[in-house]
Image 1 (cartoon, rainbow, N blue to C red):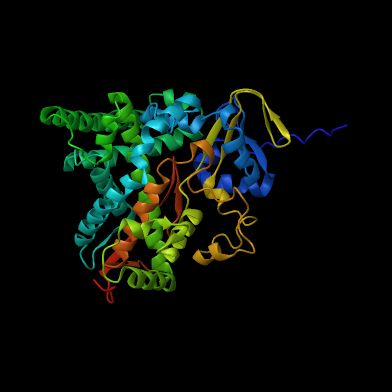
Image 2: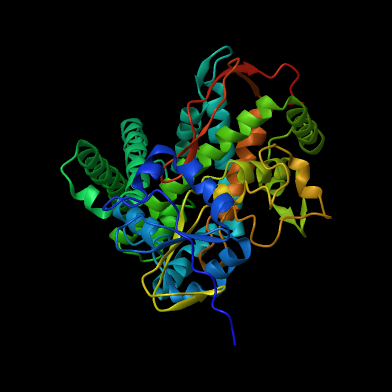
Length: 457
């Protein structure tokens, strides 16, 4: 006779009507990190009263959730809230709709397309670096958000946003992403209250979508006036050629704008932060760039793996370690569509499932000395992380469609910045992660200096 599995434990701290909103609002990263330590592979929390939310913390179960159970799951709470901004995009869709959207978008992320984007990315990074004056102190994340938007404009939007529109998008996206993060962690009834935060969210959401719609309309009008795009190689032109509706195009462009600014800016910021704190690691990156590039600009061939080999393997490992230690994922969700078996447990239809990449990648049972920044941990073949423990771009059918684009962008940017500039961190400053819709660095003020002994230029 098969023994019944133990009941899924329930996290302490839930309140009537509020669920676990208070500990999540107070310290979401600390609260989520404590769940694995205190409760084991699965634990139940309450985000929406009346709905079960099971946090999955075991890498094997996460892999089952993202891959094996994918046909039986909807995208869940986080993506519903993101849908308030993005609409029905490839990120928020599930099932056949997701498959069809992914098929439509896949050509824009093909190897040949990324190859064309790298030169544009590098030119934008070079222009940004030229504007960073020696001795200038600035918030690095703000600078990386601007740089990420600049690269996005060139590769995706065909320069269809002017400076004022850029500033509006930056401000509005910041408000919306903070609002989405709060809405995931609060009961649904809170967002219906006439609160100033809700009004700010609604205004910013409508404004950022209107800005993107204007850019799409303007580019479409230019294409119509000239009789077509004449083979333009920006991503927006490719979407227009794919016969997608205006609403679909705007949703996908907004998705790229969020992924290409919030997450890219955070990863770039953390990379510069860790290299500044670890001059020995920075020196190894610079030596590799000097040896491989020999004074020439970074190119597409430098950022991709050919037959499994990377031209810049140490820089690749540095970025792998940044993506581990400082992953931007807070809660990735799914929802059961029918009664579903997950490991030992049978979950009823309508159960919310979630996992936290940020907490998973810092689990000491999975990564020895997890808070240390050690790019060479990825050379350890005797004690590799277990399957499903490292998920920088997700897993399964819903794995990030832009992972290749993102890695190319990150390597291009870091290689170009480091050879021209170095950064000094203010004495005693410790930058801490801040959890919202994504996990981003808090205020990160550094002083930029010219590279005293640059690689051959």
